Length: 437
Image 1 (cartoon, rainbow, N blue to C red):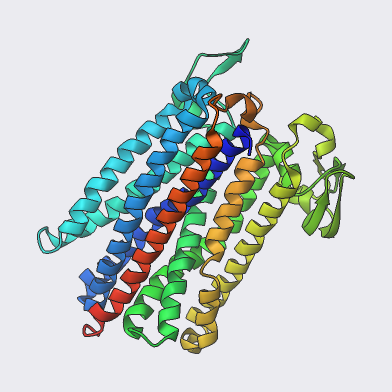
Image 2: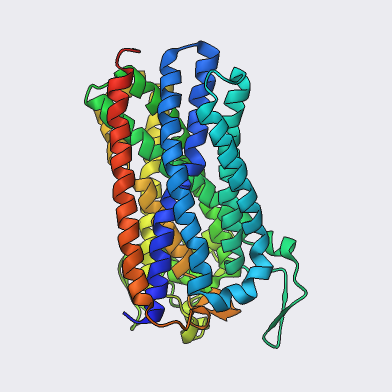
């Protein structure tokens, strides 16, 4: 493995793990706060038990997210020194603010975990809300920094120099809103379906049914609402990418030829050598409509983009198809669930509905990983879009491949430890809260 590939692989591995920890860390505190609120309003001890159980999960993911996030901050400087040399002063503000939000989250989480029976009950609940809000802000600020890489702003690039730097404009770049909205909803979808799936499995096994039913409903409603809203944010993102990054949109859709009334492609295998897509379902005009709001609009294809600036089409296209496929599957489950809540109450206790949620447990995180692949791989060969190439930003230090192997072992070990801790926590729920029911 050459050093350039090793550096990219290490960054991809680190991001791939961290994004799961951070999504759960952003969203679980809101589940916890809702359960806590229900306990305060109803005095139903089951909701208190749900809150305490989820708070332990929040603590686990806060710790692992902090570790993996710290590793990422070091990797930016170690693996991509040329990038940080120029980009650091420009997009450093969202990272600085993210650090502030992280510290607030840490303090609030400490208050929440150790505040039982020590604080005013509503102040205690409020500290849990602060954990969620600050975690959500942390995620949005990091996404704003990534959005800057896709839509550079806040500086003038003259003769290879970065002049007239405006950190506020850099942070509030053209891509930050659409990316932040899409990522936030994705976090709620992925975490909602994953948590609901675990509780659905426990219900099917007949363990602590009352406890898990309450937990399932809170997580499922969060996940299902977000799943229904997500296609709307996807439409906003697609229209934005069509204008700012036509090469990325062309790679997502394997759209090789510029044309009007462009077809939306479902599935298919891109043939980059012959500039075509095999075995695809084509919907005439729909790509033009999704990109520009008009069935007859022209959509830029890869033929209008220099060959050396083409993203990896096959990887980007497959990742995009996986993301959309998972998203549509979860939206369908969400519609079925809301129909059950509204009209078909008998479905709510039916094993087939619970099995649907169990089957959907990993779908949200598969979609998140695929979507992040689209965002990062679809920007290539640029690390700062149309300004700096990824190959020009990598460290000249030899031996990065060994670092990649070491970090792979660390992250795999971390994943095993987290999985073990969560499994033990789920089993402990059964023994601790049986009597409460």
